[in-house]
Amino acid sequence: MSYAVLENIRVSYDGKTPVLTDLNLSIERGELVSLLGASGCGKTTTLRVVGGFIEPRAGRFTLNGVDMTRTAVHKRNFGLVFQSYALFPHLTVFENVAFGLKLRKIESASLKSRVMAMLDITDLGALANRYPRQLSGGQRQRVALARALVVEPQLLLLDEPLSNLDAKLRLSMRVEIKRLQKKLGITTIFVTHDQEECFSISDRVAIMDKGVIQQFDTPEAIYSHPANEFVARFVGFTNFFNLTASGTGRCLNNLGEEMVIDEIRNHTGGQTSWTGAIRPDDIVLTGTEVSGTNRLTGSVEVRTFLGKSYQYELETKLGRVVVNAPKDSIFEPGTLVCAHLPSDKIVLC
Amino acid sequence: MKRSVFLLLIAPGILLLTIFLFYPLVVTLAPTFSNNGPSLARYLAFFSDSYYLAVFFRTVWIAVVATLVCMILGVPTAYFISRRRRSKSFLMALSIFPLLTNPVVRAFAWINILGRNGVLNSLLLSWGWITTPLTLLYTDFSILIGTIYLFLPLMIVTLVGSMDTIEEEVTEAAESLGASRLVTFFKVVLPLSLPGIVVGSVLVFTGAITAYSTPNLLGGNKNMLLATLIYQRAMSLADWTSAGVIAFVMIVMTVVTVMVMQKVSRRLDRR
Image (cartoon, rainbow over all chains, first blue to last red):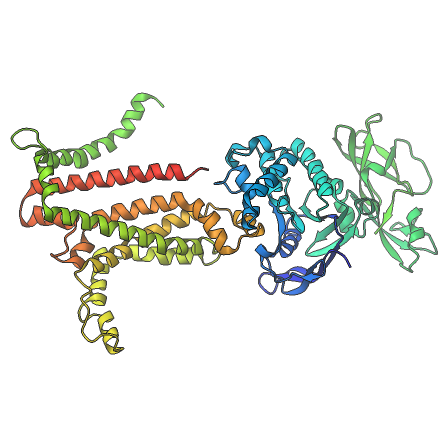
């Protein structure tokens, strides 16, 4: 049995509109799991159910086999880090970190050494006597993390902890979080809307939409094999087209042309139609028309400069296609180009 | 901004204050400092007169107790209101509502409740809890009740404003660290609302010291406060100089209170 388990969790604030519908999630001990999705997808609600701030209308939350669905927040022993840091403004860094230990009646010598050890780990030792208002965003974030970790929580809950930091700091903080999490072996749930951040830090990712987990897998698996169109769009697929089966291992597009797709070998379950998807980076553009399979002719509608490459929007017989092409050959708007969709880059969902 | 424009803009205010505040103040207070030449004799007389002193200390006592009671009643109420989402504006309106009624009318309401044949005595008599009616009206007690009722809304409104600035996530963080709701209240909410409590207390305290109609109607002649005493000296006895002395004592008390409380507030608010 997994360490933290959400079973058939149902949440609705007004009793009518569902926020979470029969949500199931199992997290292994020591794992860092992310909940990823756009705002309003239910990821924060899920975290708040785990934290005990929302009581679900139905379902169970167990930790290490113990039912905690209705355990009071202050009896759960979970560490929480918020987007706004939520430090106690009237306490110093030391007092902030010591808050949880004081409530646990730790005697003062060992409390002091534990707090100082945690401040050292998070590189805050020199700031122990400062007040939160005297700290930078990154320092506040580390205090929030130290405060949550020092009580040795059974579960660490991070709610968009990096969203208020600037880009450079966000990068180093996420490495920091990952390092601490692995070092202390704390099972962690991380809520974010940033796909890159999420994939870089997580052992497994649950992509959520409309209160439902769309896919729960390792970042690598999600990246290369999105379970459905929603997930595919989320991980950077922008070109979609309908496919129908024609005999074993073969399929046709809307125009009745055959498309060669490697992945179709894995879809032997009698399915007769799919949505094919491909990333803009994976399409190869050529100026001259080349005949053959998986080739589309289209005219350049819009060209935008992306820095490393140009992005083209093509008008083809299959609809609008977005392609990122290297800078060495530039196509002017209005010209006809040929797009090659490599058979190994097309995914079916 | 140009200096001339600046002066032009504040001129109306200065003019108004001079005509209606500074000038009358000087005219009223100047005689209190003279007794055939500059002298503090009138103030020394005030503080050596046992009757005046009794009134002075009664005023301070009522103001202090009223402030404390407003604090004790106001803090939990304000916290409750500040943590509501949907019912917040309704509850706020409800707590401000008494402020919309004339203080005289409200004092009369208390006369009806606390009087010898008032609502409270009738109830206690009919329940058999007492055999003779209690003397509630025209005592320190009735002044206190009236004053608390008068100023509690100010305390609540001030505190809700101050408690609104405490992020919900901060109290949630405290709970997640093992603090029950009650512990969170005492360890996080209360320290963070101290500035609001100080401001509310200043409002209640200075208000209680200067209130006139409530102690006048609920205190009667035996239980004078400084404000009612001023009226009596000036209007009944036409002794404007004594009234001026009392007025200046009240001004000094209020200013000193505000200054002390501000200092306390700055010391307590370490954010």
